[in-house]
Image 1: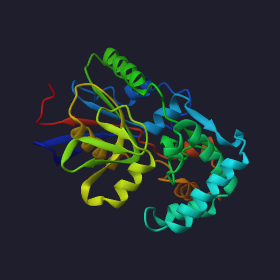
Image 2: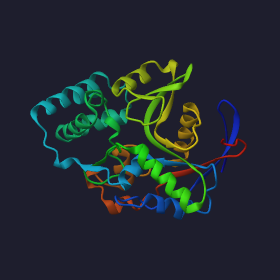
Image 3: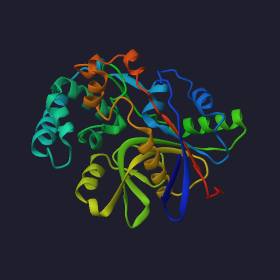
Length: 297
C-alpha cells in the first residue's frame, strides 16, 4: 500500500501489513518477523513493532490474581479511581467506555492493578486513570497484564542486529505503544509521555502528561508513544509521525480495552478470556514501512 504524508519534507511511504499468529510468551520474535516479512525487507526499511506484543513474547507479563491488596492501597484506589476519575472527572478527561470500565470493575481488581502500577512506576503513574506505567491488560487472558521491558533499547538492538545478519540488510526498528504522548507544536524535538520511553526527547511525566495533554490541547499534537528505536536517527518528530501511521494500519488486535476485548471474543468478563480464544483473532504486531522517495543516510 502506498501512503502519502508530509513531515518537514514531502515523502511517500510504502506500507506492508501482514497478519501473524498470536505471540505467546516465549515466541521467537526475530524468527517470526523473518518468516512473515523476510522476502519483503530491504535496506533502510523501518520495522514497527507493537510494544505490548513484544512484552508478551518476551514473557514480560504478570498475573495480578497473585497480588495481595493491603488496606492503604485499597483506600487510595477507591479515592483516585472510583471517586476522582469515576465521578468528579468523568467526561472531562476520559471517555464513556473508560468511565464504565472504572465504575464496573470491582474495587479489589482495580486495587491489585494499582498496587502493581505503584510498585513499577511510583505515584506519578498510580494517579493515571488507566494504562498506568505502560502496564496493559488487553490482548491477554485471565488477570495477566504486560509490563514494560526495562532494558528495551538493548533488546531492540539485538532484534535489529539479528534480522540484519539473517537477511544481510541494514534496517531500522521502532517499538510503539498505543498510550498517548504529546509533542509541543512549536518544539518538535520534545514530547511528554504518560509512560516510560527510551526515545531521546520523550519525557515521562506520568499522569501529569495525561492531564496537560487533555487540558492544553491547543499546545500539543497527539501521537502514540514510541518506546524504543534503533537505526539511523530520523529526528523525534519524524519518528512520532511514523509511529502514528503504523498505528493506523496495525489495528487493535482483540480490542482497545478489556470491554472491547470481551465483546469481540463473546465472553462476559475479561477474566473469561483464554489463551486459545486470543489465537482466533488476526493480529498485526509488526508493520513494515519504506520511504519511496527519501533516502535514509
